[in-house]
Image 1 (cartoon, rainbow, N blue to C red):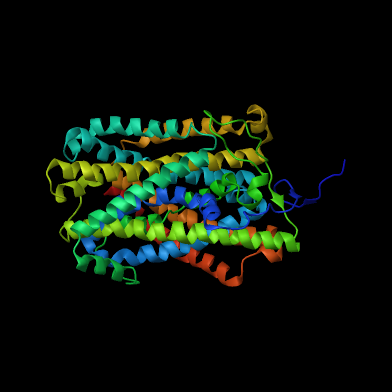
Image 2: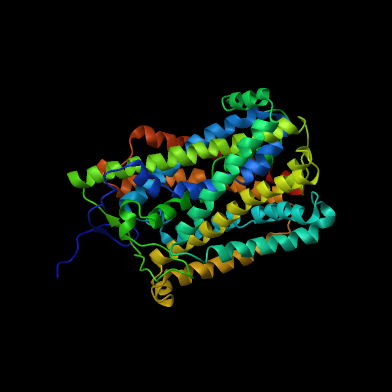
Length: 486
């Protein structure tokens, strides 16, 4: 029996050399729509805390001129996602697994990203905030400090509901994809109709102009919220890295030859390779590569980027159009606050609570999956004893991490208030993106043949990620003592 050719894998196992799977052919619109999807899951996380909590808090206080931050952050994150996915399309490995191949080694990279994931996405601000929106349904009003215990109870229930939902379906990725397709249609469509009815034309124009007011920072702006807008415009941080896990599970390029994580109910045991693959730059492989890369671009620019821009713009102009400029939004009831301004009595509260809950709950749903998924894949790729314990069934590891993550989040669900938790998470996301940009440049240069590597201008855009997100993370660190003492 012939031994498969191998290529050195740095500080990880070697890559098996094989051909890239063929992309859908011919690439019709119908086939393209069928294979698009990982960015929809990211979009579910994108249209969440930044758009329904952080953005409105800043826009009603300081105006829509701050939307330029969304423009810069969304463009940089889209290029960052593409370069993450470049490695995954070529090897089939999610990008965090690739980082573990770099010095100083897997234990350092795995531990670092696991800690960052729990700190950034494990603070349950989304579940807490979605609980305030859902509580408004039962209370018939915006919840306040006196409703704290009731909101906390609802928060625990919504957190556990996330676990239930990712337990069903053949592929967890597919379950998340369907949930977020529905969310995108309902939320973006509903917000657009509400904006048409309620928002003056001047505010629409103010918002469009705000996307290009580069460099505007009002004096006295909240440091924590400003950094949070940077981090959670578009997706941000640990969430961006998870896009590559979903591309792998969706079967993009070499992901077809590695495997995927199936659900515990309705899914079969699937063998997931602990190591990725590699392809030689033959004419056939390069032809397949170009088509896969076009599909990746369509998924990122037409869904992720446009969705991120609309996701911040539509709720932003809604809040700005109906809430007086200079308003400080409430700490507890922010997720459904807009309901008091919509009119129609209690139905305004119900409408705002519906949108607030759905937006924030889908974000928490993706967060529960993405942290568990990335840590699972990192353990699976490097720790043979974990694979033996799991009897080669990766679901055992995934759901064990999932339970641990939920317990961790439950410990913090009552700490401070939702906007504070989400804002801390968003500022930590700036660190994750700055670090990941540097590691991705090194990763793609080290393991991808020259024909598959990015051009220099793309690498310069990753340097832009380092400078932009790194600056705001350092700004957050300098001000952290004052933030925590406030």
